[in-house]
Image: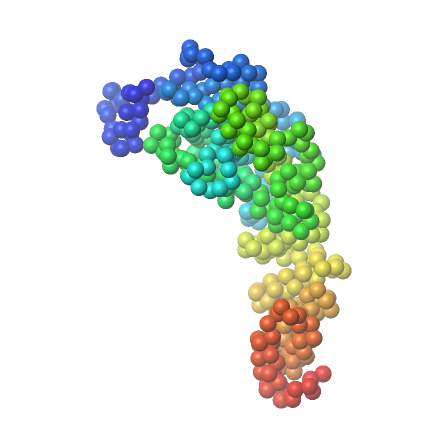
Length: 416
């Protein structure tokens, strides 16, 4: 064991030995170890087995499911068709799997001893689900104690390799930064962290449903959008306490509920990615609100063509979404210097109370600067004044009105 450690240290320090004398780092698999481990039989009953790395071990549980199985309202095999559809999609998108294979997507989650982002927070369970060999594989790596972190990250990083794309829920802000933090303590002894692509489905869920759901917690999103109902699930707030109980008494009975909770999380990520992709690709009927938010999403990432198509489909709706789409579509017309179309759209939007102020101001701007018609611009400035709300500052609008009155030689109060 000491020989192996020295070999790895030399490698990280850039000290190379002659190839014919280079020692092989031989891992000791669990079946070659003779010593018994606490509750090994009970671990085996829940499908977890010890994996040794030198003098430390972790528990790894692996389960597999046929592609015909469902998680919520989606079959696992739909991941293949969704990734295929992305290959032919005309527009780029934040969740696009273009130029990727279904096997490249790693649906990843962690369980930690707390929610802080400091170095004192430990990841004690990490894992993922992934399509492999016509099956869905769920693989979980459990830390039996802080002394085994080298083994934990060795096995995890060796298994995931250097290619792939993480799919997480708040993973950009929490899970992966936590992995990076813990990795710094063992980086001289384990593989480097791969430079994964990353789809964070929390951001996607907030874009589409923050106004329609009480919360965008995964448990709520999966219930409302995926028809997933957890049975006898371990609440998240209990997870750290159960792990600390385990450290005092290494009975997997404390942990089984956490393993099941974590497994459910990563499988829900797969179903949620399928669901979001079908909505964005137009393969699933979306609500008007979802269609509007998808349009805004495309606009935010610079895909004006896609956002324009979506807005145009919504501008005739007689509600707030239709009004907001009118303004958004007019804005794109203005950016593309299609000023006459932009003005027509803004004039239509002035008829909608929800967006009247913004639309009237934009009409005034276009009429003054593009069409050189200060009198008409003043008319729309007066309309804007009529809808002015307390929270909107008046100063800019007052200056505009005074300037237009000078340009049009109209005294205050005479504009019709």
